[in-house]
Amino acid sequence: MSDALTASRTAGDRPPIGVLISGRGSNLQALIDAIARGELRARIAVVISNRPGAAGLARAEAAGIDTTVLDHRTFASRDAFDRAIAMALLERGVRLVCLAGFMRLVGTPLLDAFPNAILNIHPSLLPAFPGVDAQRQALEHGVCFSGATVHLVTRDLDAGPIVRQAVVAIEPDDTVESLSARILVEEHRLYPAAVQDVLDGGWALKGRRFVSAHQSPGSSRYGTRNR
Ligand code: GRF
Image (cartoon, rainbow, N blue to C red):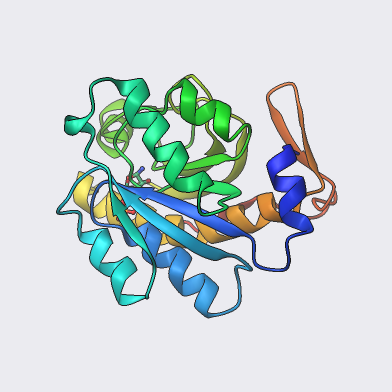
């Protein structure tokens, strides 16, 4: 477990998390709702968007959450943009960063500021179909199952240790839209649970595996929901 997260265990029951978005923000909303229901013991200290008009900003504001826009186009370099994000998170005491539809690659300054403390959600069963248009990739490949993955963010795109996955069966008449909608339902369940897994601590990385002491042999890291 990272030092930052270890510290968060002693900082009270509701460790501060930061959420980075670029658009719609439905996963952000799922985190907000899970916190409101008491299912996720955390506090969203800040929502940062790289897009000024992101719809997710309004969701955050409606929930009374502090928001910041850091438009990547206004920074001289990718590192400068990453440093500004890291600063905005650190100055609010954020211990865990959740990417929720954040459409920028995470670079060294941000990774170094939050070692093993950045999560991402991706709409496929990684390592299958990383990158953009994961649902279209799955349909075009002809797989029978796809789903969603929450993973720790590393230097390599969509390739970090897997925290949780959910499986979604592909139907013969699926379109990108219909499959995306069913995967999104699972994403909204998966992300708060995975964030809680990480905040609970008691986990370690073994090679590239996320191994948690809380996951007994009978317990499951995935939700299977076929329709
Ligand atoms: C989700 O499908 C997520 O898996 C991917 O981007 C999409 C973001 O949707 N990384 P939203 O902004 O959370 O609604």
